[in-house]
Image (tube, rainbow, N blue to C red; front, side):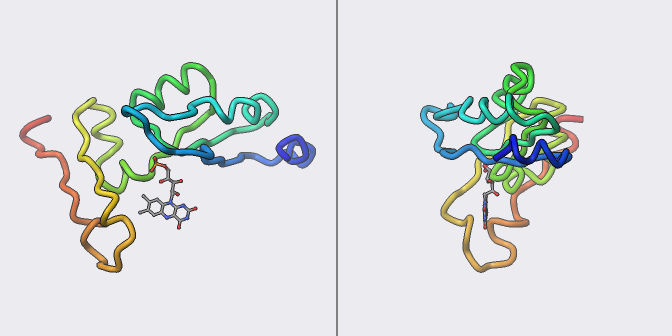
Length: 118
Ligand SMILES: Cc1cc2nc3c(=O)[nH]c(=O)nc-3n(C[C@H](O)[C@H](O)[C@H](O)COP(=O)(O)O)c2cc1C
């Protein structure tokens, strides 16, 4: 499929790992998109089960150009700052991922305390 996209010089392709299940805090199949990385000639964006360390490692190993974050972004409204400072992340709660409340699980996860991490 991505070889076909190459013919049209598509700027970027965004793929999700087929299985984003974490086992012992590790992505179950971290390099499953490697064949697509090799085949697609432009920017490849990948999502699914990554944390800061796994994303940095995957970038260093050139498994994609950009890595996306879903669950951690939901639980950490200041995720880029936390990544920059390498601070602990709020844990996400899957049980409130898909509830109808407009606040709980969407906008009520706490920001870092400014005084704690500067
Ligand atoms: C609350 C929540 C809702 C989501 N809803 C959808 C959805 O409707 N359709 C979809 O394709 N992916 C959905 N996703 C998956 C994300 O788009 C993304 O692929 C996934 O969160 C990335 O993995 P990560 O959470 O481990 O970073 C959702 C994820 C979360 C956390």
